[in-house]
Image 1 (cartoon, rainbow, N blue to C red):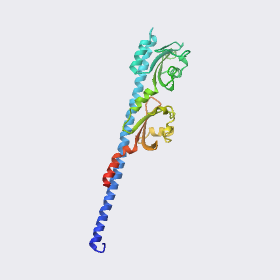
Image 2 (cartoon, one colour):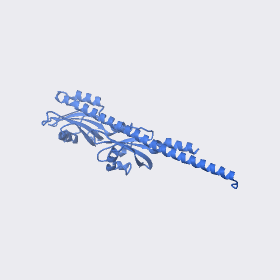
Image 3 (cartoon, rainbow, N blue to C red):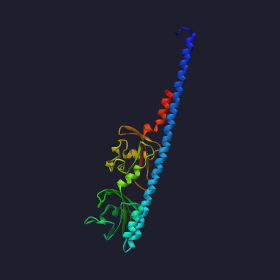
Image 4 (cartoon, rainbow, N blue to C red):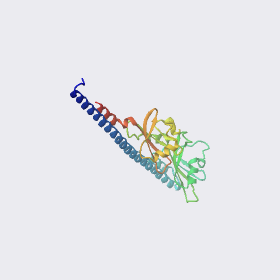
Length: 275
């Protein structure tokens, strides 16, 4: 078959054509793959930053409404103002505790309750300003809760503390709504590397390393400063993980996207090229 010059030239031409097509296809594939990853990094990084800013604004709004309760401290019946603030901020609870241990709650409290001994009260007094209290077990509901608290009265002679509560389950719903892609999810991690909001409620206050060994506190700090996704296996599935600090809080917002879904256009291109 290859004994004639004509046959040899045909084979050589076919070989050159196939080699050229393979090289061109490979170059196209790797270029598109690189550009797709860069595009995904840019888009998801920007979205993570945007969502982190929205959460920061959410915290500022909660603190502002909590601060408004201070006006109730001088009222003969502070309950109406406290109720209005609770409804305005969509809080799970709102209250006022005086330094002499008098208190105004919108519901009955457990027997022997001492408001001045609670972590949120002491933290606000020590900070002498607005504070975001880390998650703790609420005395009246027994549920995991975060609090916004602020002292009232003249500086140096604080008369008490106003506070509001948000259950972690309520905050988890807000974080769960963050889904930039169909097979993505978001979660919040605190400064100690503990999960405070995650789609799986059973992981609340567990170390982020329960999701992946690559999400320890040191890695999370580094990730929050990056502008690209970090490859992480979650449940045996390759993901790209992005993170941004939530200003005004000790929280880091983290978004994980399915790597295969992000690179779907590249796989489609590969199939077309192979065809």
